[in-house]
View (cartoon, rainbow, N blue to C red):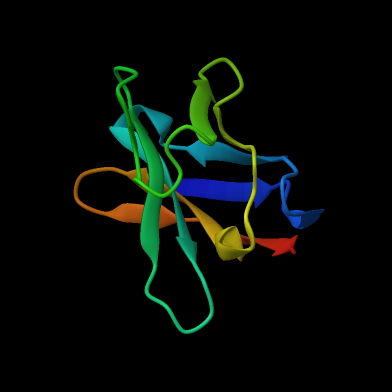
Length: 115
């Protein structure tokens, strides 16, 4: 079992920055990768950024150059630094931990970007 708790969401103006945190606990040895997803109203959940246990990262095209995913293994925490935020980044952001045989999800944190 893995537990994930997100924090750091809020309201920000377009062009601003936020940093999301995801604290993981439980069977951490079983995690092969962690990621951030988001879901905007009326849309499907989509991958924003991911990082493997080896440190490889991946990003959605829409956030490349603006968002950075990182992990602090000592704190069992994954971060998403979001810069140059746009109104279209408004969504609930979810932390995900991939293990075998299942994925775990946090409850989400709301990010609202005003124009």
